[in-house]
Amino acid sequence: MAKLKVGVIGCGAIAEAVHIPGYRRISDKVEIAAIADIDKQILNDVGDRYGISDRYLDWHDLIRREDIDAVSVCTPNYLHAEQTIAALGAGKHVMCEKPMATSVQEAQAMLQARDAAGKKLFVGFTHRYMHHNIRAKQIIDEGVIGSPYIMRIRFSHDGPYKSWSAKTDWFFDRERAKGGALLDMGIHAIDLMRWFFGEATAVKASCGTYVKEIDVEDTAILIIEFGSGKIGYIEVGWSTKPGAIGFELYGTEGTLINDYSTPLRLYLPEDKSRIFNVDDFNEGWVEIKDCIGGGWDTEIEQFVDSIRNDIPITTGGEAGLAAVRIAEAAYQSAATGNRIDL
Image (cartoon, rainbow, N blue to C red; front, side, top):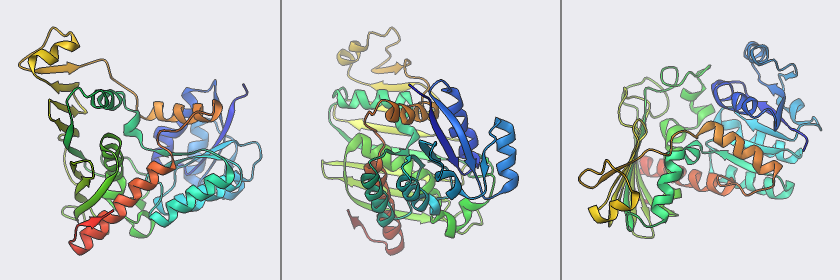
């Protein structure tokens, strides 16, 4: 099978840290044909560093190329819908960075463009491709901890420029980002919680700027209700020093804790814990150590394989739309103080 030819739109930190290295890692399957960025210096720096000769200051020129099969959209949030819709219209498959869009209306238009083009639309929900989260999902789906009913997620760090090496300040610009930590990190947490719990029915949220002098929120708290008798709590932020990152999930028969810095931990009654056949069983706790890695590289390879082998996408446009719908309702809740039905 011939190599897939891809173009990368936007040469910022996510393109340089994730998309370009991810495609290069599977160079037997895919070739980076071209890159585009409005900043000539950044464009040439990245092109020179990775040996990519075809470079465009206007992304429209990139998607006009008939030899390019797919594109990665790695630009600021406000451009995602426009560029994705145009690329789909030009006959390209698209991997769009999260958030898929900045409004439900935009996300719906992207799905319509996908359906009209008959192409793949993949959303960059990296956490679903981390092996410990995949294992956690299997444990939940197998009913190991009984019926899960409450989940807490915390994704927080010191923000762009510190914990994340952004190249420009667009993350802090409301016109380009349309939101802060909630739309950046919270969108991952929202998608992960939906993956574990199903469709949400209501959200109550609070957003604020407590530490950074920026035009968007540096902290957000969400309480999400699910029609199946489950409830979730999300805390995200750009204003904390190193601390806990991950989730806790409680079921009627056990507990699942995934601190991203340690192995997945499972608490079960002693007789049930023995099904894992481990020697270090200690007062009901079992460490699951066979699920390290995954994430960005797995995500990129899944996108490429979905095109080459025409397989379904787990993090497709519907997942992107659902997460945007919850985020949009969360901002409405934070602005009004009301609980918002979904």
